[in-house]
Length: 586
Image (cartoon, rainbow, N blue to C red; front, side):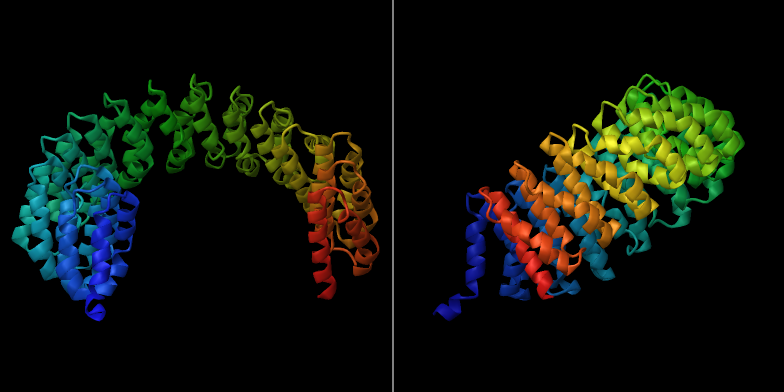
């Protein structure tokens, strides 16, 4: 009897758990659907499991979301592509629920299944499903249907294609803004499957309806459609149909629409080609850069370098640079920050002379900006300018500003400068670096903020790698080792960290003669934190130094620390001893 009942067991558990009051149990059983389907076999999955799931749709959104996701990968469990149509009814039901994320996931799963279905099945099952949803009484069904047309359309016969285009056109004029929004979002995908003659006539008339919609939320989605359609149309059609729309949108009464245009303008320029860009889109872009809404200016400022690359340098200097100068003193810090993050990229576009005359003063004013984010964005891109104007000019004009920022009261600015120092050092060369920046690197090792001290220790190591051990021995190591006598234990810990980083770069001889004695000496420190850090550093030095040094110097020190009264010191010392044993054995 038990043998006969066994196949029923998984579905019985599933049904019990799916009806359980505990949402977690219901969720777990949905996520195990594939396991249960395998246990039931393909036929019973089709005949029992899927119908059961179709009925079980009045549940918590989280459970429905999991179900929509699982069904998308369920084709192998129902017997392959020829039976894929059985998965459509439960997903169709999920396409009509109120929760947006459930509907979106159901549409995604339907698209995945539809993409694998055979052509006759698409015509027999999938296209009727799309038509039912598009004619749904409740707006949620109509919203979902918009995302399925691009799957249904390619395999439809000619008469059905005409019908599908007519239905989509109706959805673009639906009474509910949510449906029109969905139609606008999916227009690009649908247009990509439509044949060229119909693209110019039917799709463009839908597009025109959406661009003149009275809801700004629909119009701003139509902006995205501009770029998608622009790539599908011939250049001359693009100029005739898309360009006027973009120019109008750039003056739209809703700032959200203008914001979308500012964000998408670079893609739109690619679609319409260089000539119309110069004649029509440059004035539109200049308007956006001078928009009265800060959000629009932020979006436009962030694209300034990309836009300049399309133009020739003369046009950029003539039209865009005056706006950039205005934006560098904009009342909104976010606008200045957006500009600072991309302005350095303009240097290669404009060339050396224009950069020195026009851009350099702007860089310097942004480097002195009162907001740290603006200063940070400029610092992080300095190398782009260096390539154009050369190191001499960079050092004369920008170095004083960098030195000032190295002592900035905002620790994140100091951190950005530290991370930039190795790059600066490689470009300035040893002599210049020693004069101007050497002292700063030592000063950061005594910073009040841990992240700065940590970055400063890494910086010391990177400088040693850049200029070589001999230079480091002369300029870095003595100053670093001197700081081990600092009265504050946190600074002594930073020096131990710096030693562990420097040792692999400096090599065995210098480590044994200069660095190791300092570490051994620190093991007598009265602060336990220092002592267990000594154990960690000694462990990192074992592979670097000669085995005889390990035996004579490092192990006796670790043995002493392993008998320390403090439990943490003993732990790390023992760990280091075990590590040394393994090294000696190998």
